[in-house]
Length: 117
Image (cartoon, rainbow, N blue to C red):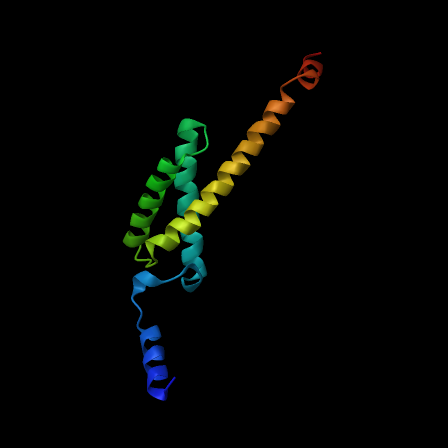
């Protein structure tokens, strides 16, 4: 690679559009705000239905989150937002199901009968 090509490559890396930022390139404060907003949107939807979210609902939440990020002037690509948000919501869904299973075990069988006596 010639010297001139290296300079052009470095030049283009410095002026990449704001929309192409990756998760690691936004500040910690922006990351925390994004996760708090996502958690709020997720909790709002889950408390309404008391069930884990399906794919369609997750996409709606991701679109809403992306609009909030644009309003807040946090520039990150939509693909990156959907990757992070979808991973978090899947994890929260899984944890929610584990909690439901634990509650079902507590109130089923002998442990429930023993608690009544």
